[in-house]
Image (cartoon, rainbow, N blue to C red; front, side, top):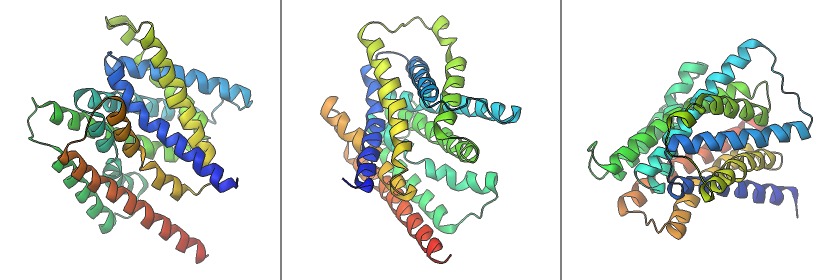
Length: 293
């Protein structure tokens, strides 16, 4: 088996695991914030063990970097909580599809934070994505569970867009695993008070599911994704990552009997179509740029 095939199998495995993570919001009869607490706690402990085994240093270069990663950890806690709440309020399809719209927010945040040019093509893609979200909404009523799920999902999408831009800055100095460890450790500490104020406690089977979510579907999935980047192009990884929603929706149909509605299929098709199109265009531009050097 070639290195590229190994990388692609590893990449698809990682994306599949990430796509299945949303099912836990339905399987676990706990508040989303409690699920996220245990998710980040188990995941950061696994990542700590991994860093120790690899004998990687846990030290950061300066105090400012510690503060920056603490802020990123707070954003991560918001992202995963709103993502899980979106699925609990509506469906796995709604949660994963609204999450896929994060490039919409990146389009407008990136020029502000990195002083990059706002391109007309990116704005058009963002508008089409927003139209896709609009199609998914049956009726915009705050009392409607579908509307609530979409609003939570868009909040999760916005927070992930902020987090991805913060991670872009972190990756210039630190490895993905070290960055993920600090972010998840911070999220764990910030969410820890939930254990004292929330009456619903994880027990028996739920505790095992939380362990699986944190270790296999978060830490291992994240590690496999990073490992795959050694063998496949970043652009390829971006395109394959678009399948996360597809895997999640198919899994929800198989394991939860959640059949996506016609609106979700049409709106989701538009959103994912834009995601795949922009990923392919980006890959071609990067390839042409390399040829010109």
